Amino acid sequence: MSTTIYTIEPVGFIRSELTRLESAPLQGDEGAPEAWLELTSLAAPGLAGITAGDELIVLTWLHLARRNVLQVHPRGDLARSLTGVFATRSPARPNPVGLHHVSVLEVAEQRLRVAPLEAIDGTPIVDIKPVLTGSDPSDR
Amino acid sequence: MSTTIYTIEPVGFIRSELTRLESAPLQGDEGAPEAWLELTSLAAPGLAGITAGDELIVLTWLHLARRNVLQVHPRGDLARSLTGVFATRSPARPNPVGLHHVSVLEVAEQRLRVAPLEAIDGTPIVDIKPVLTGSDPSDR
Image 1 (cartoon, each protein chain N blue to C red):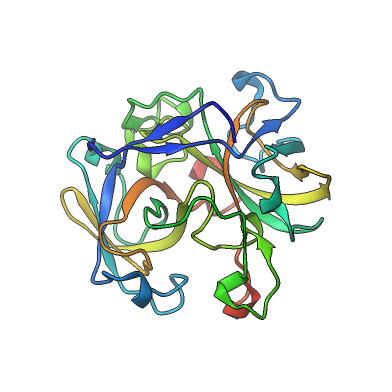
Image 2: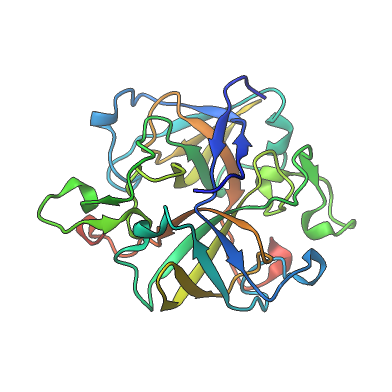
């Protein structure tokens, strides 16, 4: 693709009852359970200010995804024509970053309990961001 | 943070009239211009199926951001107390991935013209995803 390479160090990992890809829903709103976001000791100070009830976007590294795939049948449905991965939410893509919109249920020391989350146990966390709401930038 | 490291190869780059961080808005809806997403030849087949009018989420690598910062004053406002980066949209964070909600204005061969986009010219593109809308998963 390009000769420039960037490196990602996970800031934490997902702890979930979902342990197999086959049993994970395709999207959070399709029956995904709650899960814990377990931050590393080094990254945990980045959680300051997050409280129960917050809406977050969790970025994960879908470490089991195939990265050499550029076109897929959406949702694995062979009846649907081959589509570019950038037009789908398939985990298969050159840089398999997952996006998950979750609500915070509980804040513990280095951990957040959130729901819903369709990523499986052990999935690395790349980043966490607040959902932007309202039109007033000073809220951000 | 962790000994596991993942690598990102950009799938393309932003081409924008914004060339200096100082002149870039903090968020797309704060007056950001249109821009081109220029894909690499290898990644371009991943665009198949994207058409003008689509709503996309563009993930970028904020290559100029400081990665060793875990708490910031939101929006650089010293009157606001130090907050964990995961509770803010600051570009400074361990893995500086930017999220940008854009509309597609035009599809060219290996490029998409989109708006609004606050990232500066040359910013690497990590991924592109459709915005999920509607409650029917078969739309996805």
